[in-house]
Length: 71
Image (cartoon, rainbow, N blue to C red; front, top):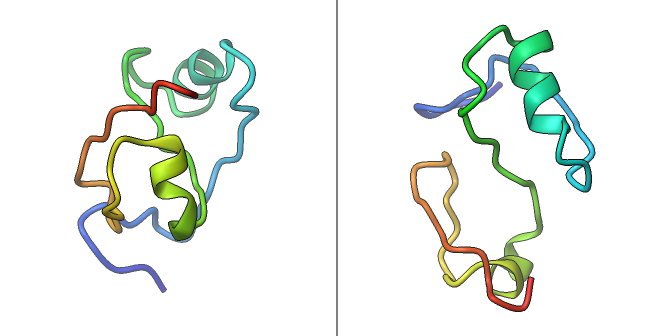
């Protein structure tokens, strides 16, 4: 069971993060919503600061973090 303000309702959509078309396809063809809506990557908590300029987890996707310059 999921808890929190961003609970997914027992569903997960997995997409190829390497493709620039993934966001467009998921938003427009699967979820039928505006194309500007963002997505969040899943990663291990210990890898947060490798990918983002933060060391805090965002358990319910409530924080915005800048992508690390090296990524």
